[in-house]
Length: 461
Ligand code: ADP
Image 1: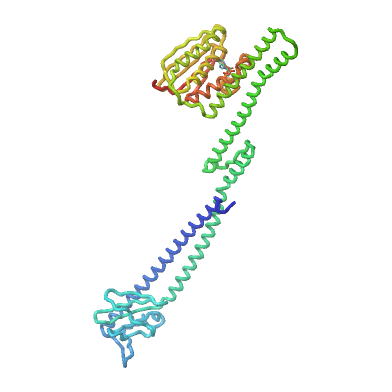
Image 2: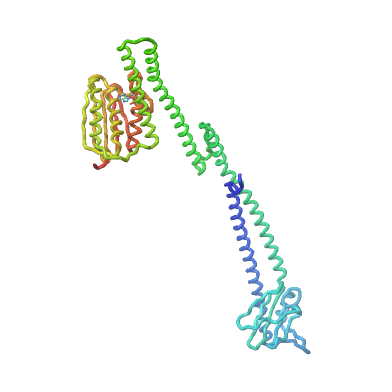
């Protein structure tokens, strides 16, 4: 992996860079502060001594100059010790006259000293190599300078700088090491996620990411990914099951057609026998056609090409038309069909809504008892259009009830019969209702009947 594309290296690089900048800034500020304080102290000392020299020179307390050589000021013993002896050796002074000649200088004054630039105002300061000097020119034309050797201070400043650099370097190394550890630790789940995703991509859908800390950011991501993987696995399993079920359902009518045609071809048949065989084949083909239509509808809904848009449909009209279609079946089964219709509109595809109503009504009649009844109604509740179908049939057991909307689920295979009931009617109804932004639910009491309720968003039509 390219280092610049590695998250770990990029994090580490920026972290180290920011840490280095922060440490350098902190060290430079500390050093600058120390240096400023040191110079302020030195300048204060120089200023105090300048005042002493100026006072002494104004009072004319001068020992020199004599025979052209600069003389020394006749300072009081207390002040003299500042410029002499073991303590005072580092300080020196020089007093220049207006003509630039040295009027007075201490013994320790550097021989190459040059007069400062004359200017009015408060005392000023200058640095020359390892010397710091304070000077001031007065009205009478005298310029006084007091200086001292600051070599020791400069050396200690350099030492402090090196110390700060070493401490900063050590802290930086420590920070980088700690950062590396933290980054490696924090990114460990990413490596795990990548590895698991790789295994899943290569086909092992049962893999899951281990999440020791499900509350952290990456932990939450892992939990979400695991949920997605679980749903994927479930979807693949259902897909496989669906294909197996569909093939199974198609195999029966196909076998019927094959057997019937083989039988018919195997020997000479009378016209009525041939007609009977053809009738069996027609029924089998009819069943296959219905099944493939159902599969096609489900595929369309799954692909999202069935939407809630479309035209405004009068739901009571839809139910009435569906009821007319199932009426012959109701008569055949001796089931009474009552309708209670309110005018409610919803938006959608009338054919699909008719298919939903037809499926529910067809089931209510098919799974009913002779002499039973079906009550179907359409009404409006707030902003919802409700289509309700209740029957007095056999009911659905609590064990089957949660599964009746599953594809190819048949609660009672004996009663459903292998004929036209493949267990797709309710799953198609559910998929279509949901594609229209609605929902479908069922309640049932075994032995006394079931009620299916469809809720759709109502529109003012
Ligand atoms: P099918 O094509 O087998 O009727 P459906 O998806 O329409 O499939 O229904 C699934 C199962 O739910 C049926 O097999 C049946 O057992 C049960 N079922 C559906 N509607 C009713 C009902 N009104 N009364 C009792 N059982 C029902």
